[in-house]
Length: 197
Image (tube, rainbow, N blue to C red; front, side, top):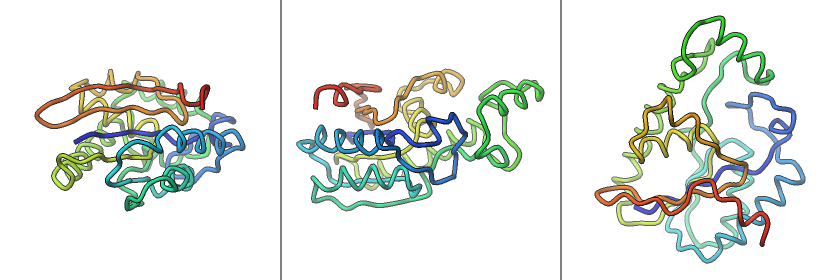
């Protein structure tokens, strides 16, 4: 299965450095432009099905891409960003203080009412197995969020979660991998389309 992983465009929350998690978020003007550039860049890719997080920031990005493809679009909460519980809407620095106080490593820290990165990895693994079974041999595009995509890449590349979380994933980036018996990395965190399209 060929998997094209796309992170949503820039949001107002990204600019303010807020923890968005399961909050919908709104694309900035730059984010909307990024979504259009993504769509133009991907218009010649063969895509059999599009999966998108049901969060507004991902949906709005997916809708732009879908304009160029005659492929079904499935919006699902299964690929939402990590749930940060009571910390959603707060500044990232606030979570860091709480995590340090907890004395837990980053990948094991679970915010009150939220998920740890281990929890998120389990959710990503379950989703990846499901779509691989359903779309084996197909080209699947997924529009999601930084941490969820990092966990998918970690699973596909056999990286421990504590290393997978360190990967950089820019807004409107594209990563393309093949999963299954033959694993292949085509590109990770490419943003060249934002400069040349």
